[in-house]
Image 1 (cartoon, rainbow, N blue to C red):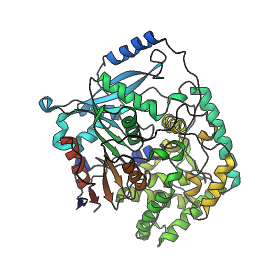
Image 2: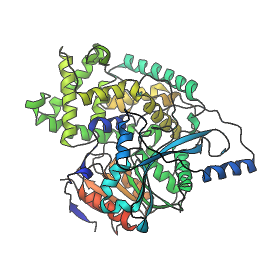
Image 3: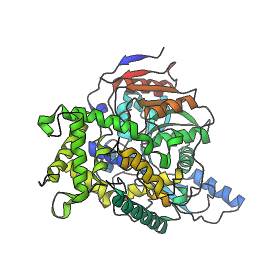
Length: 529
């Protein structure tokens, strides 16, 4: 019988969540793709072996993390006692003497060296989301056991401070299909052009953006850090990288936590359409929450009224784009952008996150009715990151990974049929999650998607209402890995759990595994309070 316990919420640093805007950006940027194909000439065998040996033996130059006076993330790492370094890896692991790229690392070293457990490598997913700033968050979650670990944050290839892939786009590149055929045709033309732009700007990098290459990077980082086996904590798409690592490098990992993992069959271009039922469930719960607070937000007194009101806002934006802010800070949201803001706001179910989304939808409803709006500072920052140049680099990286991981359908009519078939039942989220992306115009992936063909003793974490990596995906992955354990958080619409959600039952179970290295005897169950 599985362990079942009521969860208690922590307070203090371990329970603090990242700001809704920053977490929302990571979710929104986890979305589409690019691709092309240029490879350097292969180095002959002896020279390749020598080049690989040099890479394995490289010495890292650990230094302060702060890059300048405005680098708040680097300053936070410095205050936490972290040090940063760049590790060199081959663009193409089959050609270690060819072009090289760099990956950014941060590390908080183990204080208890006598009882050191090893390296705990972190990947916050995205794909393409930076992880450099994660070690302080994980150290807080680990509690007393933190001193036994070298906690290492890794910006995966093309993410964060690692060598970038820059498609030359003006924004993060995530849209909905809009309210009709004309809007969809504009999307087709836009994404065709963006794929061509990315191929022209970064064609040499794109074939090597996939998850298999990220797993190879992890193994080279393990060797450079001098570890026989490495422990790993992957969140979201970072958990998919962990899954790939178990299949490609069995025997080279120690403790592995895969938090909110997508099923391997739902990676890459299959990621978003797979989310629709759970996204609708999260929307329904949020709409109920907002309806109970109609006197505060004015969005409607029932779930149906809330949904109908937001749909009217989208339909108005299709005729007249909604302008938020003024002057140089003004942002226009049409029917391809308003649903993105809704999607991003549904990643978590805390009251602050739900309130932020309600405020945003109320603001847009007011603009649709003819009013003017100045967004709050967090909302203004989110809008710039989603729809301005600040999100372009991360958007390029995430699109590149998704397109490299799985071939997408090529015919625009396939997308249109799915959009229309989902529109009646899912008018807000169906057109967005089924929309065409640059992947439809990408070059074919260089490698096949990851398949799970061998068992691995890992700890899986999943919330039953996860809107990004559905709980059914975790159940399926657990069945593929019979030696694993699945730690379930019941009653939560949350993506990303350990050290993020602040659930004491779940965090304690993960800490027990990381401290002792032994998986639970059964599949534990915690319940959101």
